[in-house]
Length: 231
Image (cartoon, rainbow, N blue to C red; front, side, top):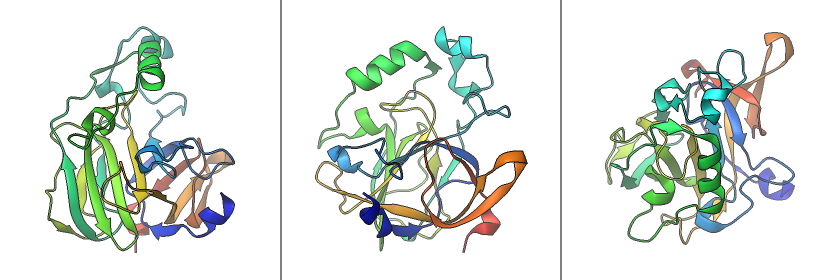
């Protein structure tokens, strides 16, 4: 695993502001330790509230009782950007977001009754998505907000172009971005490619931030990227 990550492709970060890494391939045992759907090196990014405790502005017990709405979640509706220049080679939109979070039913569905993607439609798994092909490979942006996709197949986009917004569609338990890089346009056939982010800041103790160059953030690290940091 270490050798593979040493040869990771360098790209820009696809989000702006502060984000917490819920899943990362940079761990000794990667969270997505499967080749299914090209997700071997996938990341999951979401946001925590100001206390850094939960991904929403509600008490934890609201989540347990199914009382948290997507609008209560910190990441809901945040813009998603192209991390490299390329061509849009796939788009899926119109899949409804789950409007409420309910901890136990969501966890059971996601882990034991997860829907499968088919060649005809990836959205039961990915929700609304964008596929971007460029020099590093093909990037998949999944679980986007319904009707937020801002590009169409065939569009040529530059680094930083807005692609859509963070949602809670498909096999998702809370609003977040699933991001992965692959060696082909069809995730059912493609293999994952490891990637690292050109520059970002990592949260340290006492509100200090450490600048990381060409790094792979680990699970539950809080990182931030502002527009001025991009090349």
